[in-house]
Length: 429
Image (cartoon, rainbow, N blue to C red; front, top):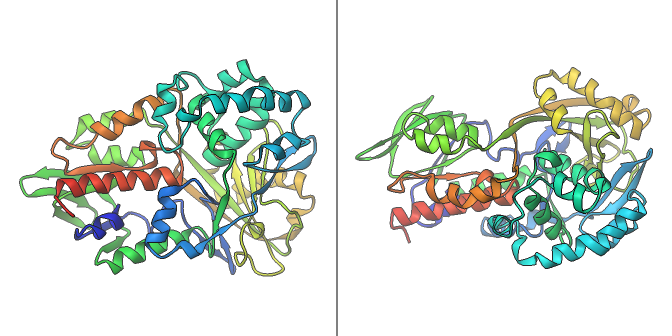
């Protein structure tokens, strides 16, 4: 949003609560290794994100990742290439009956609903009647429980922090539709390099970015909108409130109680990830290993960082990021680093026996606003949220993944929406 407004000629100030920009799009140094503790990969269908990368001169940071993953089943890892229907149908992780139903029933279903299934316009799935029930209910009825447990549950837990029972069928169908042809992209130097490049472009365009400034509220007035923060109060012509829905509610509550109340149905789940630096690579080919429900106690997926992109992990070392199940993530958020490590290590040791002997260093990353949930009915509300939430004269616009889709692309697209709304209000070029 700041980049788009600065390009349009606005004088932009970014007030960032954290010590760095990017939110979950961040990279941390860990004894010389570069660990992506939050966002791991970008999708080739992230059109606005890729355009933004080109606009800020960061397109060269993006590198195609092999897309080789695995699903843990019956005591071993079965390799798959997500986005390849042929690979999924050939995988030994799926029962024969499930594979038959995928080819005979689900693929034709996705084709029939082609026009309604876009992650860039999830309200279309709602208009097609696909937002009325959970993917657990739909999948159990139409495809069988193996579809829910072996396909829907691992994907949703690993990448979106959701359970099938609480996820709109329309969202899952849109993910599956786009996943048929998706390529995955890694960021050279780590995912945070993309956020840093956007920040550098904002500064180069004359914008100011202040880190560690927590905004407490906004107050409308005749001269504009006053932003109240821990650093004091300042008045601006207009404001983009780019924050997770619970944080946006807190900022809006005093001056815009009706708008704050409209955000009440948006649910955000806290989580945490655990990074483990090892004294050697694990020697597997895949990047991501997902667990069906019942196959692990606490871990939804393991991301092998040295298999994602060159240069992230020093030669001769290994680096894992453990992503917890939705339930375990809420527990890990409350634990200290040692307790969190103790929680995930038994699951990791089943896959990588003796991993505790390879461990050099472990680190816990907490995310208070980790995952935005999209339950049945949420897609139906999207268009109304984007249209009605800002104040009447358009001086405040909201941005966040909850307005579009639970992805980096959803967040970026909502930021562009907000910037264009403000640009029209200020009559910028």
